[in-house]
Length: 367
Image 1 (cartoon, rainbow, N blue to C red):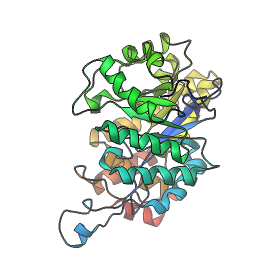
Image 2: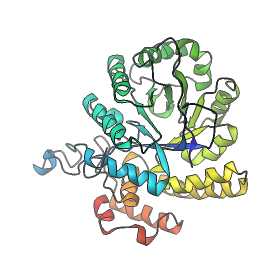
Image 3: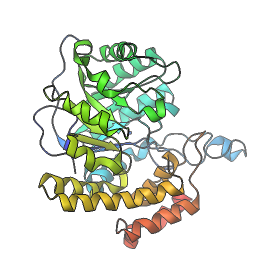
């Protein structure tokens, strides 16, 4: 279920999924003149979750609620790495992104999370890309330098979203300064306009981007605009960019258009099923691939109607992995027990989760 590692060297082999997450306690949180040589390795990319402690000092004292002081639980990252590899077939990680609540962490926390994922993933994971985007250029550069220092395989950056770039050139100028802080690392743009509010089309951004950012290797495309995505692929066929798709329920459509990888939160618990879809696609069994995609869509459609976001994703990850993710940070609110019960029933009805997969502590950890 791995798509060719995004811009990590060599010709495309198998499709690769990238999973991204940050684990929290009670659970666990993971420019130069010439472009770096991309490194290869096929696999599924997972959005690393932020794992936090369910009980912080504010909760114990009765103020602020349980998420107010939750600290990152670094101790379970190694266990989560093993779970991803052994249970989901995922060997590539995107750290400190949306699922990982990266922008809700302090700079020191983001650095420590990145360090733990690189340390625990050494000789186990194929690729670890660190998201280093921030509202402050200086902070983003600091995070990029840190990622290079600890031996990450690449860095990714979203567009600044408070004081926004108003055109392609302004955005590229920002990205260029971040990339230059880690000139030996492959650089990826994280395109997620629904959250950043930056509506600059990815197709437009990619036009001539390597002239300005020599280390640019690809794009994490988290948007439903398949016209924009298709044109990114079509107009850059000679560039050998990595096109990593980030809308899990539309992945098959993106593969048909030329996606070389996928980064998503659902691969934390639907990685095995998504790998089955990728394997069917690779052997040109498109009917089976479509059936797998429809099955995944049934679950996503169900939870979206219940109200689905980072908090609910963490609850499902806890349920399936048996590793407590802890609560999200404010302003996010913890998923309800009703949501978790409904999600569990749906997973079982789709044969994504058997009764024997659940350990006694899983539901307790979600509640």
